[in-house]
Length: 190
Image (cartoon, rainbow, N blue to C red; front, side, top):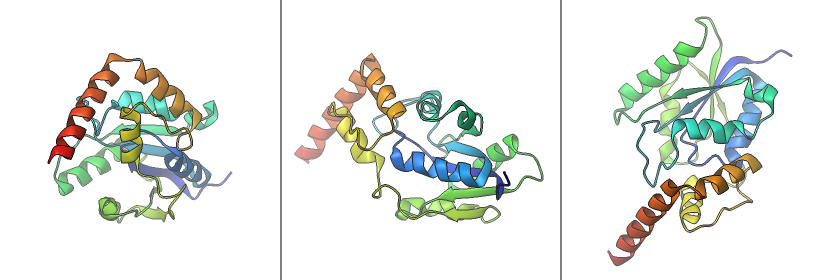
C-alpha cells in the first residue's frame, strides 16, 4: 500500500485515551506508514489533570489496537517546559530522533479551541486537519466523572475501559480521587 506520509505526528496528553483519539489514530494509520504519538505532560509526577504516567498511557493506547497496528505506532515523551519555543524545539527534536532524515513527516490534529494553537508551530510538517470527531470530546469532564467513580463507557474504546477499571483498584486512584474531591469542595466554596 502506498501511503501519503512516512510518519504522521499526533500530539496529545491522552488523559485518558478516548474514542476521538482512537478515530484520529485510525485515520492517521490509513494515510501514514507509521504514527508517532507525542505524549504531552510526560513528567513523572501525577496530578488530577495528569493522572497517568507516559508508560501507562502507552499501555492504555496500544490495548485498543491489533498487533499489526501496534507495530506501526511509536511514542515520544514530551515533558512540560512552559515555553512555546522550547516546547516546539523539544517536539521536533524527539520526532527527528525516531524518523529518518529524508522521511515525509506530517501532523494530524483538530483545531478544537484556543488550546490547539500549538498545531501552527510546525509549518514544515504538512497538516492533516480533521473536523471534530465523535461529538467534540474533551477529556476534562471524562476525568471528573472518573474521579466520581464513573467510567463513561460510551466515550472510551474497550482497552481504555479495562485500563480505567484496573486503575481504580490502585491506591494511586484513591489518592487522586481524594485530591479531586478536596479541589471540588474548594471550588464550590469560592
